Image (tube, rainbow over all chains, first blue to last red; front, top):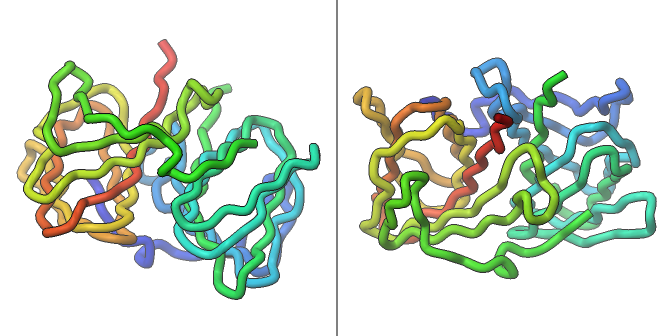
Length: 118
Length: 118
């Protein structure tokens, strides 16, 4: 068993799966392969006010739970959703998705992603 | 893409993997196979004050993030940890684990569990 606070985990600037750096997005890998989790990883992501994660996609699905702030989660099929504390979002594998921080505060959410077996 | 609030999901009384019912523990399966998530499930669990999840184990690991309240997470190897908002806990596969609500308020946490491929 391992327990920590998220603040004990190093925060880094987010990089998309294709290597694109995105400004104003910070990520902490709370639970991942490094500590022995082989099935999926728990990340805590902060999007600063006015910042956005551009549309991108990958084979991994996302399970998201919003901790604070207010954001728009959208895809390329003209679907968009406003989410805030207590809302969750499921993004299926390969679906293009983007996230905009619409509020004056940080948008903070957990975003979990599987380790797909080859 | 699917977005909901946790309150839109039905709350049920928790049942352990071996079929044991536990009092004062409520669970919502926020993201699961029913909505197409094939890799892992996101559950939101509330443990009422004074209530506990007894020691039990299973092949699935747990990734836990505490949303509110204060709880003791422990195993059968004399390890125990007090966790509250912003703390996360990783419980490896097959490790016996139990959870006690130590506070006056509900202990609320997300607990994610993989769908293991046979």
